[in-house]
Amino acid sequence: MPCIAALLVAGVAIFAHLHGAALPILEPSGPVALGERAVIIVTVLLCAIIVVPVFVLLFYFAWKYRSDSPRAETHHQPDWDHDS
Image (cartoon, rainbow, N blue to C red; front, side, top):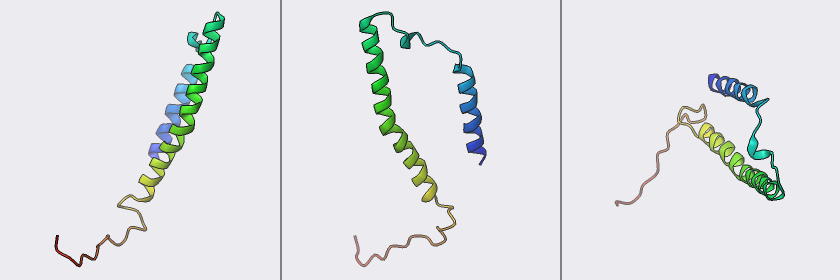
């Protein structure tokens, strides 16, 4: 739980810091810059479609299959029937 609280505080702090910020890269002053802004926005959105689920699943699997999980009462003991 402390980790979630720290992430929440960090997210609120970043939002508060950038809330009134002007990003000059997103304020185009010509037709070429306007097209580049559209490309940047599409690229960020497409990357987010891939990256966000990957990180969510990464933390989900890390949490689910951790060694001190309540369901991990028994240790995996494979049944080896051969010498290698």
